[in-house]
Length: 231
Image 1 (cartoon, rainbow, N blue to C red):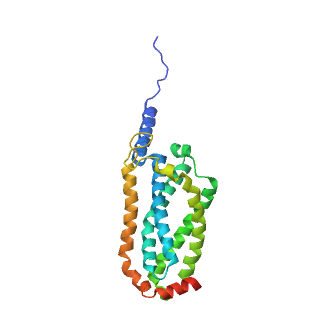
Image 2: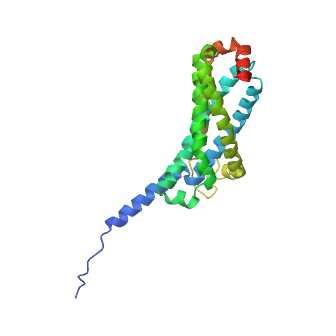
Image 3: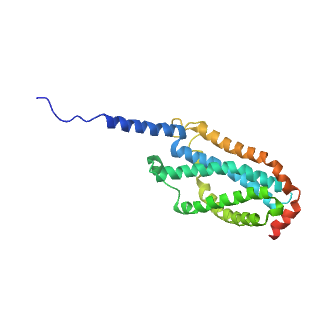
């Protein structure tokens, strides 16, 4: 006699297969955790170079005030990309994405430091942009904000860099920027390269567009320098 047992519907299997295909397609487009790691590391290298140059301008802030503003504006693009890449990893991990859970989070002390890095970064660059527009005649309040947030930012960002610096070479090798994963297959390298280049170009366009705004500061470099040392 023919079996009358209930036949399992193939629909759930098709649903699971479709879900797996969607996940694989996303990893192919973004590179998954390895691609995110490389994007973050590549952006970090650019930030280290630009921040070192910005530090030089602080030592001679009077004559180099124009370059200080230019580099500060240029940095906005890469900083935005760095926040986006780390924020994406945060979201994927805490929403339970399997590949990001397997990758694991950064060390706990770095996670505790992260809010301070983000808030102080927003504070120091926002106050810097505001200073650019208010000019030296009305710099008092915003300069104080800029100075306080700068020292906080310098401390927490220094620790942040020291914590991530050892893993940066491995992060850069996680995948290759031509799109081939170190583990095989396409990993969205072209998209990462475009994102990095776009962040730098975006910051550069912003800096160039606001060059005319530098005039109110470059006209009185000695006054600004005096306030910088005494304020």
